[in-house]
Amino acid sequence: MIERYRKFKRQADWRNQNEIFPDEVFIDSRNLPEFDKERFEGQLERPISRGALYSTVAIFILIVLVFSSKLWSLQIKNGEAYAEQSENNRLHHEVIFSERGIITDRNGVELAWNAPKENSIFPDRKYIEKSGFSHVLGYVSYPKKDSAGFYYQDFFDGKEGVEALYNTELSGENGLKLTETNAKGEVESESAVEAPKSGEKLVLSIDSKIQEELYKQIKALATKVGFSGGAGVIMDIKTGEIIALTSYPEYSSAALSSGSEVEIKKYNEDSRKPFLNRVVSGVYTPGSIIKPYLALGALKENIIDANKKILSTGKIEIPNPYNDKEKSIFVDWKAHGLVDMRKAIAVSSNVYFYEIGGGFEDQKGLGITNIEKYMRLFGFGNLTGLELGSEKEGTIPNPTWKAENFNGDDWRLGDTYHTSIGQYGVQVTPIQVVRAVSAIANDGHLLMPTLLSASSTIFEKPKDIILPISPSYFQVAREGMRQGVNGGGTAYGLNIPEVKLAAKTGTAEIGTLKQYVNSWSTGFFPYENPKYSFTILMERGPRANTLGATLVMRELALYMARETPEYFGKEAKKVIEDKIVNSDEIGGVTETDIPELLPQ
Picture 1: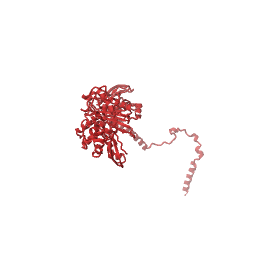
Picture 2: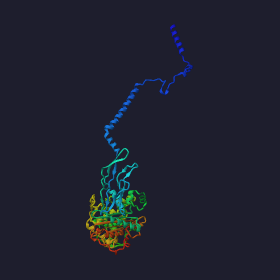
Picture 3: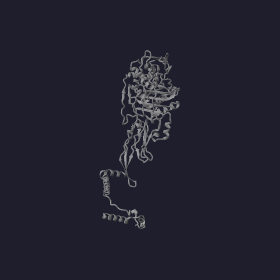
Picture 4: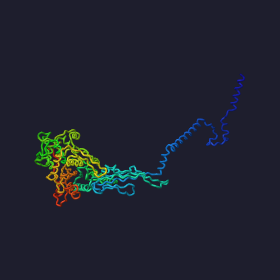
């Protein structure tokens, strides 16, 4: 017990001797040593742990492995590729532009070619400066660079016409040039690695003389009379070669190739649509020019003999389906009297074709189904295969078409009558018309048109379709079209001594008030040994005018007799000064192809 007390007392005395009071804490603070705390002096040091050491070593090992892997990739795995890339840093690749193929007409006249361009490594594309060629030739888009000076389009790109249609053949293949530079960027050497290959030379079937004159005559008449536009095409009826194809108004191939903003703006603002190639992309109501095809269909279906005569008093009357006290009247453009098939074609009798188209009293008609059948047989309503721009199919109306476009309305006899004379919803293109009339001239060979001359290296003879119609029936149609020229018919303005032509005219009224007309003239020549077909369209002229497409073809035929008589063969003669018909007096085609249905 006494010992335990002594132990307790000793502990208490020790606590009293070692107790530190607050004033003792600060009494010697001024005598503390001066430590550099930024160097961690005066701080307790702890030994580095083994975990931290191992982590540091692992990081360094990982870094070594990554760099070793990259070094292996650069020098061993991909060393050759990077060496080549390094070499290319000194060798610059430059395009050597190929010469685009030149385009000539059938006689070797250059229509499109290349010319040196100032301060540029590719040439200018040049085009014949004469009028009438743009819709055939088209234009190109030049090679293009980005802001850094690199070509993102290193070729000429054909945009329209032959330039687009035969772009692959005309383009050729670009070459390659290597330029070696030193560290200062100075050129040390140049060498051609791949030589460029020039594009193919194209020889077109176009005759540039006829092409220019055809455009000139269309433009002159449009300017004189007030037609908004026009189109013309001439085709070889044996080969399908196009001798002339032009559309008015037109654009400048050079202006579009160069990207002239002023010219392009002018074209876009022109209401006459200069970008429209009316030959292949314009669709028009044909009017009476379809009558020979109705005649051929009627002969093929045995619904009438070519010699049977039908009386035209100037109209026919049928019961009105809406009012049995009145009659529906379908008028002719004049009273023709008794006409057989040949004369009906020549004078363009509406009554005759109403009756063989839709039927009347004891005369059986083709009916709309057969009318559509024979129209399509001759290529109407279908593409011709001439891929010159956006070719249109046109329209052949039928009951289904009417129901879709007129809120389910039924097809009526009057619709068949209107369709029989090329009205109502019928729409065709000039290229379809010239192809169809060629089939009349050559006894039923429906050809695919081509713009390439047979002498061109890439020419392939177009395919043709043999129509299942007797040659004797075609002869009836030909005789009727010839009578239209020399027998006092609607095409009498083409009765010239230089060449015998056969033709059919058409005048289609357009506009809500029918105050405008489209004028057509189509046919072939020479009559006794046909070689070429033609189609002329004058678009949207004043109804009161009596000058139309016939005048254009007449003036062209007279020009050809003087300048290109080879197209007329043995029938070609010198142009006589005292013309049979004065140019101011021709074109008196006064037929009106749209009959009026009274009452409506």
